[in-house]
Length: 329
Image 1 (tube, rainbow, N blue to C red):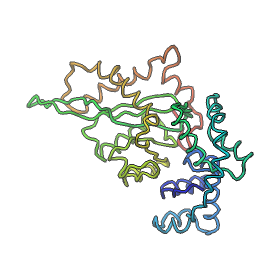
Image 2: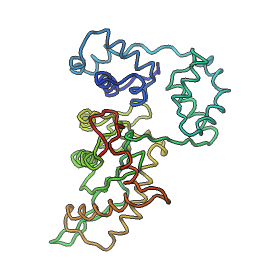
Image 3: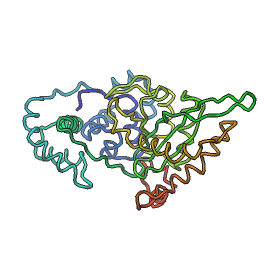
Image 4: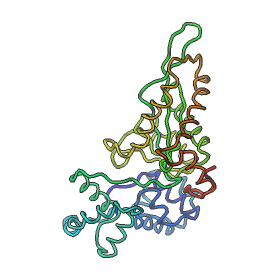
C-alpha cells in the first residue's frame, strides 16, 4: 500500500464505482490507486456490512477510521536494489505502442512478488526518467480525461454607453483522446462562472469523462499539492453530482497539462486573430461570435489526418466513459 493516504473523495469514488459494478482493475485505472490497494479497501468495506448510502453519510474522519488502515512498512533498500537494474529496460518498453505502466508493473510483480506496489513502481520510473532527461509518451483513451484551463490573454467587452473596454476570461477545455475543444468567455474565474463553464463544457461534449484535469486555479483547488491537493468544496460537489473524478495537474509538472496549453496556443492563432478589430457590446455577443470559430477549429484537419470532430464522431455510441450512463454523442 502506498505510504500516503488517499483523499476521501477518491475513496468515495472507489466505493461508488464498486456499487455500480466496476471491477478493481477499472477502479485502479480511474483513481490511479494500485489494484491491490483498491481490493484492500473494498474488502474492509465489505467487512463492515454497511451500504454505500450509510458509508456516504459518514464524516471524513469516520470514513477514514472505517476504511483506512496503517500503511504497510516498505523495505525500500532491498526492493530498490532489485528494481534499479530493471529500469532501463522498463523505460525502453514504454516506447512500444499500447504498452502501459500498469502492464509493466504486473509483469514486474509476477517475477518479484515482494516488489513495489504500483504507485511506488511508477514513482521510481518517473525519477529515473527525470535523471536521464527523457520524456514519456502519454496515451489518452477515449472518454478518459478532459483538460481545462484559462487562457492567459484576455478578450474584451465594450460598454455601449462609455466605450470602456472590460477584460473577460477565456475558458478552454480539450478532450485528451481527440483534442476536441470547447471555448467560452466569462466575466471572471470565480466559482459561479467556473462551475457554469464546466457544466456547459459537459453539455458541449455530450458526455462526462472519467477524469477532469484542471490546473491549480483557485476555483478548482483550495490547496495545491504534488500528492494530495485539496479540492474546492463546490467543485468537489460538482464532481460527485456528475460521477466523475477531479485530478488536478501537479505543480511544476507541465507535461500533465500540455494538451490544454497547446490548445490555448492554437486558440490564440485560430480564434483570437479572427476576432481582431471586432467590437462586442456584451458577453453574450462575444460568445455567439465564438461558436462558429470553435466549430471551424474542431473541423480543421490535423496534419493530413482526420479533424477533431471526425475523430470524435468515430467514437460516437462507444461506451468509453467510466460511468456508462454517459456516452459520446
